[in-house]
Image 1 (tube, rainbow, N blue to C red):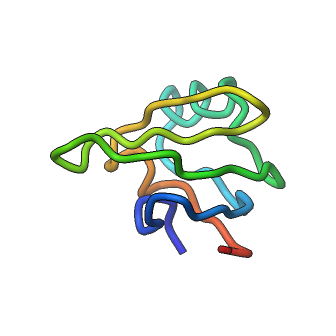
Image 2: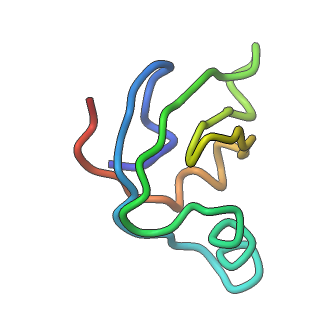
Length: 75
């Protein structure tokens, strides 16, 4: 399942970070790597961007960027 498909309040584990070179690297540098647990805090009023919480801090990602991140163990 893609991260962009999660609803507010859902938790999941990162399986793979896709995308092209620089964007992929930047997302990984922010801590979004394989095996990381994350939580979807909220979406902006127009559903873009989304705010996720991982490793104790908040990150905002565009839904387009989140679509390149695959997750599992959705709860």
